[in-house]
Length: 531
Image (cartoon, rainbow, N blue to C red; front, side):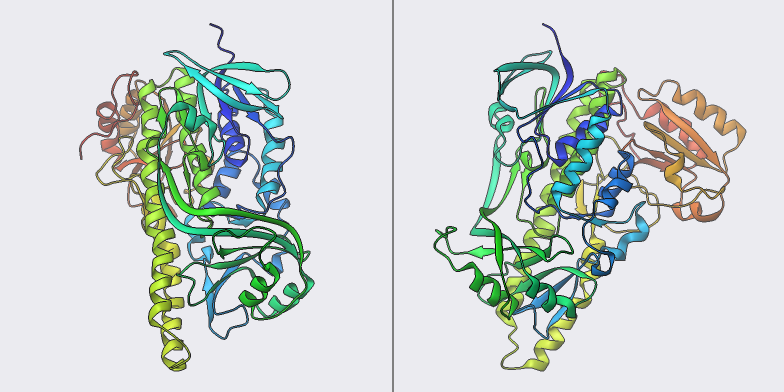
C-alpha cells in the first residue's frame, strides 16, 4: 500500500489549519481536506487568549493576526457583566485578561474567527509539505495497523491514505463517528440563538462604556444563562446569543424585541444571520482510536462562555502536533501519542466543570437570592463583591498537565491553577529575561530545551553526555543565575516543544534525571522519574 501522507487532517477550520502549520513547519507531509473554499462569515471564536497568541507567534503569524483585528484599539478587548440590561446601573468589568498578561509571552487579541482562518490559510499556502483539498469532505475511513484511508467526496470521488488521521471536522464530526469514538453529553435543555446584525444605535448606546467590546446581561428568570452582545468590528456590526424557547425558528419569534429587552433600550437592527444550537457540554470519551485522533470541536464542545472553545482547540493542535511530528520523524515511539488524550481531555473536563458550568450555576444562585427591587443597597453591595472577585476567576484559569507521564511530579491535568513566575513541572513556562536581556522564548528550540543557570563546566559536560541518548534530543542553553530568571526558583528547567515545563531542579541533578526519566523509543520518550 502506498502511503501518500504522514497525516491527514479532516477539516480546515482554525484548529485544522493550526495543526497543519504545527506539523508542516516540522517537515511532516500533511493533507488537509476542507469543504469550504472560503472561511464562513459567522463571527465566533473572537477572543484569542495570550496563550493562543503564543501559538500564533510559534506559527509565524502573530503580526498578521494582529493586523487582521477589525476592532479599533479605543474600543478595547475588555468585557462587562450587567444586571437586567445594558443600561443598568449595576455592572462590572469581566474577563479582563490583562490581569494575567505578565505571565505570557504575547498579548491577547480579538477578531472574528473567519479573519483568523484567512491568516492561517495564507500561512499554510507557504508550506511545501502541506496540501489542501478545498471543496472536499471526508465521508468515511478505514484503518489498519499501518495506515488510515479516507473516502473524500466533492468533485471526483477519491481516497487519500496517510499514517494518521486527525478529525478537526466540528461537533458533528464524521471522523469521530466513523472511528467509533463515543461522546458523553450533558444537556442543559436550552435552545440558543445566534443573531448577527448591524446597528448604529447600539454602537451609540454603548459609547458610555469606552474600552469594552463584549457585554453579557444577567436577568432573573433566565436560570443563570447569559444574553451576550459582542462587537464584530468597529463598523457597527454585532453578534448576540441567548437562550430562546424550544421550538423557536427564524420566522416565529420577535428577535428585535429580544434585543431591545436585553439592552434596555430600542435601536435600529438589520439582521445578517439567524442561527440556532442546543446548549450542551459534549466530550469524546477518548481522543484517540488507533491511528485516528479528534481535536477541537470534534473532541469537545460547549456553550460559547468565556471564549474557551477556539483557544482550547488551538491548544489541542499544539499538544498533538509536536508528538505526531516526533513519531513521523522516528524520534519517538507511538506510545507518546497516548499522552495527547491523557493531557488534553481532563483539561477540557475541568474547563467545562470548573469554569463554564460553574459560572452558569453561580449566576443562577445569585439571581435567585438577590433582587435590587426590595433592597437596592444590599444588592449593590453583593453585586460589587461579585465584581471584585472576577480577577481571581481569570487568574484561576491556568491549564496545566500536572501528573502527566510526560512531566515529573504528581497531580492531575486540570484547567484550574495559579499564575506565578516560578517554573513548575506540568505548567506553561512564564516569560522572564535571561542575563543578556533576551526573552526566554528566544532561546527555546523547536524540540526539548534544557535551560541551565549558573552551571559548572563539569555539570554541563555531564548534561551534554546525557542528552545524547535522550530520544527526542534536547538543546542545551546556559546562562548566569542572575536577574529575572531567579524568579523561576530552579537552576535547571527542561521545556517541552509546546512551551510546558517537563522538569525542574538543580543543574547538578539534570544529567541524572535525563538518564533515568525515559524509556526506550517504542514508548513515550519522557516518562517522569518518581520524585
